[in-house]
Amino acid sequence: MKPNSKYKIEFAGLKIGNHQFNFNADKKFFDKFNFSDFNDVSVDIDIDLIKKSTLLELNFSLKGKANVNCDLTNEPFDCIVKHKAALVVKFGQEYNDEDDEILVLPHGEHKLFVDQYIFELIVLSLPPKRIHPGVEDGSLKSEILDILEDLKPKENSNLADPRWEQLKSLKK
Image 1 (cartoon, one colour):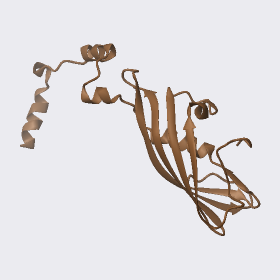
Image 2 (cartoon, rainbow, N blue to C red; image 1 turned 120 degrees about the horizontal axis):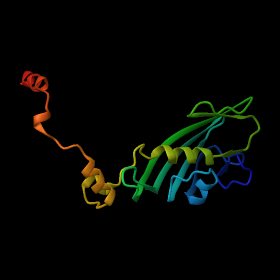
Image 3 (cartoon, rainbow, N blue to C red; image 1 turned 60 degrees about the vertical axis):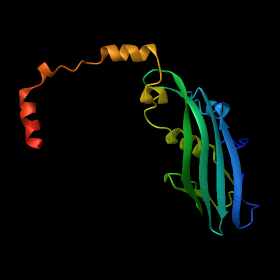
Image 4 (cartoon, helix red, strand yellow; image 1 turned 180 degrees about the vertical axis):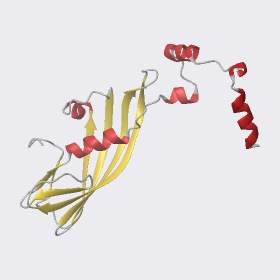
């Protein structure tokens, strides 16, 4: 974690109670992580911090869009990013981030860098298979879609195995 990062929360001087923090993740943010899956990205991150006497509760709320390429056609489109997550920060002897939802900071720590959490939340909020909305509703016209349609196997009832037809009759 970089000491000059703007994605940090200095909680030492905060009073016990609720506090709000806002950040924005753009293309430059992801370039720092050498992540190039996005053509462009703009995500607003709202963090609700609840400071208690022995721990911190952080509630992340992400909202924005990421311009990605379709996995089928390679056409760029805007994918909506919307996600909520929680993180509990406790204090202990040494730093421990093995649990996804609990972070242990050493006693005496006074700030928390959240850039790694923001990066992971945005990347994991996107669907694993990115399909252009025009492919799903049939409105996208693309040369690749035409080629895929030509390569699609044609249905031919003469090639059906008669054993399957007998099994289908048992369903009724």
